[in-house]
Image (cartoon, rainbow, N blue to C red; front, top):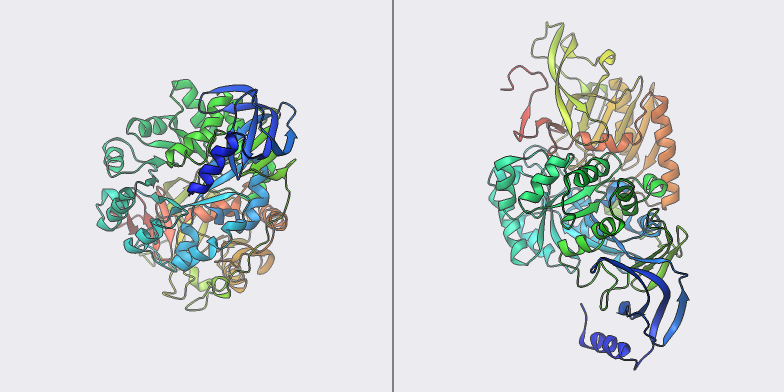
Length: 591
């Protein structure tokens, strides 16, 4: 919030009565408001832009000759979950800020599902020290699928309304269609409370078209980040929803969507960029929002349009364009200096007028907070986990085979197919079938509440031996495991529990590698470089088991999601996502 004194000082500085703090001289200004690029100087005082007038001369305490570099607004990630990076908010700065991202719009639903409102508060204690801006999309679904999963905490409509009044809160977090189409009043109340505050509601409209999409949009939903085809993108625009074009670790949508936008000739003014879920190593290797911009330009989009999608479009969407999203007078001075717009590699990043990164490195590390002990003790089993925990019995104990629902993975997407496959049965137990690349999948309740274990089958991991386990399984964040043997699955799950949350790779009863994620069972206390080194080792161990996925643990974390078609798996069992109901693994009796 700007005070009278701050506004007065800015005005008087522009009139030459006080010196500016900083002059960025000799830039090519990328003006996302006017759509122009032109030479000028940028004057900054008390975190804000004072003037961009060409030919103006104002006194400044510090002058920086930018050598004709392009001055680009700081980029905005319009929807992300920082827990998926495995990094704390502090460690994440090392990764995203040098890439030019100065604002993160974060849905903290992962830590909220584990630890509720207190978990949210614990995550926000570091905000004043961050060299980027973290704004909160208030989690609307805690739990995501009531009655279909067990979570560590709940956020009711009254709590959500109170959190919406926090100064960091800018929107109601992603709300899936089942909450609207089944006319669930608790969620409609959350929408009403949000709209009454003149804030927006984020969507999650995966797989919805036609009248269902119209009904969904009519409730007040403002956007969707789940489009995977140009046709889906266009359908959202037609009903007045903005589209957040996503490029994550397992959700690679930029090429298809931007390619479709260019082919269809769609306006880009209602398009933004997001990452949703992206591992830190991939951000370091290829980029963050700057990757989306760079890739869009390579596909044929005009640089100005791609930059607008990453800045002013997102700011307007969240109704914060009076503060961020452009390099214009009165706005916070989030500025990237870039030599080549097509490469979009910042050589300098300014956050609120302070130089925070140069040449792909953060200038000053942001120390990871000392998180409270209780948030690092969230994994508890109600009963022991053994190989027997993962048995899956046929209804016919004498059968030799049966037909079953199998989660069929789709490359570089989080959606999946409901495959009907014939599986062998041995002594009443439904078996894996490695000849079809069908493995057993399980989700173990980890809050000490029910002791539930949901068991199903999945195709697409190509594991030849061993097992994996991970304590992040969207959105309930129970422990998810996949494997070639029940005994290895049990060892992997118990190793994750021993770590109080994390990842494990097991083969022949031995832990090949593991990684501790103690903060809510989701995030590390280590710095970014250490986390990336450890994750590289984990991924190499997985490759030795036969799986060649680029991000196997990210894929594993999404398999269980009970709101992404067509199937999900929770500690309660197999979920028919579109029907929002539990179903048997065997096909018989599910109608």
